[in-house]
Amino acid sequence: MKNTQKHSQYLDHGIFLIDAEYGDSGVAAIYLLEQDGEIAIIETGTNLSIPYVEQALLETGLSFNQVRYIIPTHVHLDHAGGAGELMQLCNNAKLICHPFGARHLIDPSKLEAGTIAVYGEDKFRQLYGTIRPIDADRVIEAPDNFSIDLNGRNLRFIDTPGHARHHFCVYDELSQGIFAGDTFGVSYPQITTKQGRFIFATTTPVQFDPNALLNSISKLMSLSPQQMYLTHYGTITPSPEIVEQLKQSIIVFKRIALEAEHTNNNRTEAIQNNIQQFLLKKLFEMGCEQSAKFCSEQIKMDTLLNAQGLDVWLKRNKINR
Ligand SMILES: [Zn+2]
Image (cartoon, rainbow, N blue to C red; front, side, top):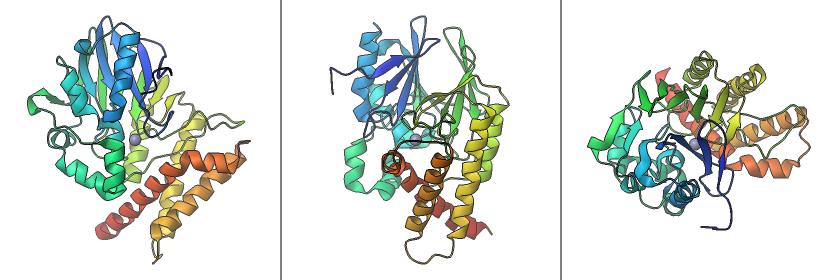
């Protein structure tokens, strides 16, 4: 751990953003909510992120014992990979997750195998280590509209399929903000344009469903959120322009996938190239003055995962037709 560096920042309403240092800084966030001495942690990052959670707690005079809830928005490992280790450290905590995700955190073997299929064994161990299982009696399943009370602060769970079927978002009544996981896309603040933030959807394997995702975004917007707390990365104001940009990306990604459907060789690569081209063109149109090389580097992992997810969606889409 780079001890000299600060890895967390106070936002507002008792909310801290902790950098999960997922491969690099500014890639994945963990949110810590403190309400009069009780804590909820939304997203866990990976096992390697836990020292940064500990550091943030120490800096604010808090401890693992005050953590009541650990809440991964879905079970993809950049969000839930550290949940088992963190639960081990937080004796008074319950884990809250989507009903479709619970069994994978109680027995992570399938989740490990599925992620190894995407990243390969070496990269998997390097990114995630070994996933620790969680006792079933410490897991609470949160269906749509389920809510919890964090020392008088209401947190409500909104079922949001689309990125994955095991995805929920968390509406925080106090900030009127939504912890959006991957439902409200990715937007890296280090990429800047004259027209404001650049945002696009994430279509990671293996359950991407474009129509469900569009509906889930509308469902979130029906709550009139003041703020979105993105896991990738940080806060964003969900203006009509931002929502439009996000929804447009889903429609374009779907079109790119369908156009590549009959590509015989390297279909994923073809999809990735077209996604990359679309995003860079969009950035240019929005008056981004950073180099294409810099921007490509920032979104490289996302374009690859998006292409892989769209490829899987094409196969599923074909079977269902
Ligand atoms: Zn993610």
